[in-house]
Amino acid sequence: MPLFYQQIINQNTRLAIWHITESLDFFLKRVPAQQTITHKHKQLQHAAGRYLLPFLFDDFPHEEILIANTRKPYLPEEQYHFSISHCGNYVAAIVSRNERVGIDIEIPQEKIVQISTKFMHPDEFLFVRYGGDLIATTTLLWSAKEAMYKWWGLGKIDFKEMLRIESTDSISQTLHANFQNEEMKQPLLLYYHFLQQLCLVWLNTPALQ
Image 1 (spheres, rainbow, N blue to C red):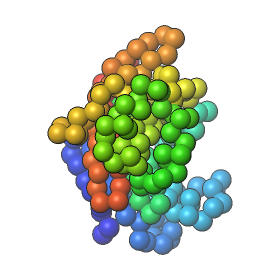
Image 2: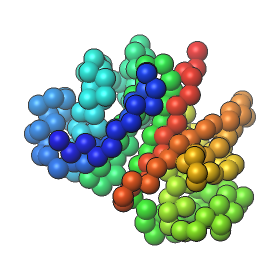
Image 3: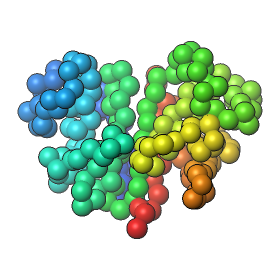
Image 4: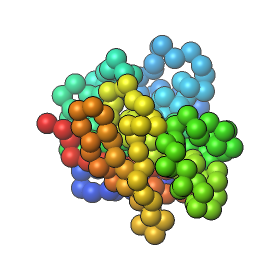
């Protein structure tokens, strides 16, 4: 079983990363096929992500998943909150009974540095300047913003202005950030790990009422 990483965050929230080595048929024995996806590798990633959900909580009703206009998957009664991320041959998922969640995995690479001006606020380049490894630090910030975007789930996000990283702590492996738009400003605490070739970032907050 190619379980790459697993963490019980608290009694209601769990995450895992799966290294995909199986064929699509392996996953389709356990989860429904997605007919709208035609690219073979994306089909495999999608099926592996859906497979992880009941792996984390065995009563997860994956057959009830709907897709919002923003392309965020959700359960209509919010029995669980969840987020999924794919990268290469890896898929990550976080599931919670009572917390709003977001997750992202990335393989650090030069092309993320090349597009950094599109998603990083000028103040955030200080983290890159003093972060040591340019590619790893830039990937971490990108992954954090992707996790925040998924946590928000309602689309219409300016990554530079609305998703702001305020500080990083390599000892506790956390990032302090703010989500801000015209209606609200909410501090967020994100967690991260560098796991071999992967950067993992997630956040979990009390669900909005």
